[in-house]
Length: 434
Image 1 (tube, rainbow, N blue to C red):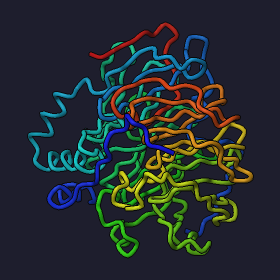
Image 2: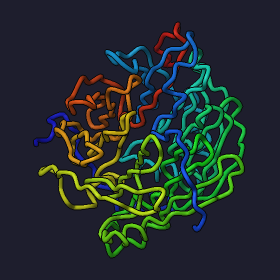
Image 3: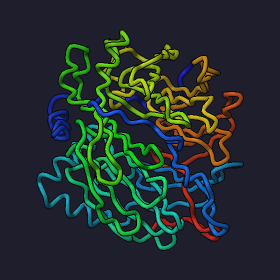
């Protein structure tokens, strides 16, 4: 397998003085039985067209550019518009430059997780009426709601700490949960008003959020420190407190803490990191699959038994170095989704430059589809395709779940990262770049 000729040169994470700035970013017994509601990456409400007046689409967040491309969620995946996700950029930068502490973290984000770029849009969800898109903006340490017609900001919520990250929307579409990386907090906000409904504490560097049991529980995966070069196994203790925190989605009381270090050790995989990256639940939520730092593969976890049951190692790209410090933010593989039937997993082999569809029963991978630094994986509106963001070549690519083969690629903006299903009014037209 050869590396794409259009791939951008890989950036080694900064060390020395730059790392010192980036380092500023570092600052259970209860049994929970899953319900029957699916907890896949995209919420159920996002898969159902809410009314005849709405059009289902994908929002593609172009992280370094600060825009979101809107594309059809099935069929031709054609682009239908673009929204500027940082219409208040001048105001935010003025605020940052006048505050030495905020400026230090802003630069730290650029030199660390941003790979030399500012991170303007991480995650996105639309409101149920399709009138607004709610997005987290890491470099601005906030969450905003933007009107999809006017491009104006409806509300803004500054998170505690200095960086916002992954989000999740409740199954009923009324609330959105956002990770605040530097304060070890998950904030839960009202989608319409931006008012905080509640929050809870997590491990170090909260990352992925997932609602389960029809919205009864909210799972957060803390990944710890991923922006230093202290990646050798004997330096693992420097990575911080990595754990799953399960909270009541109504009261925000922490109900359970899951330490995957204990589960991995019990399974005989002390060599694997316990920093959980993207996850995917089966439709009945009995199994959870997750990726971990530095590993070309994924892990199967039985939620009922509270134990790891299988580990799958996927092929390495011979052109990818085994030197762990060359992996972007510790991610060898970052991005996974599950087919609606629960029989296939789609895996983004980020640093190995491929995407593959895996049979969930046998764990046998399909063809390795060449992709340039694929960073996220989700499911098309009709459930037939896995859709991945290729951050290395600025495009979104659809892979057929049935055959494992590439369907099409669509050019988007600079460094596409999160891809989410959402809705806009049927008569909406873009672009909105104001």
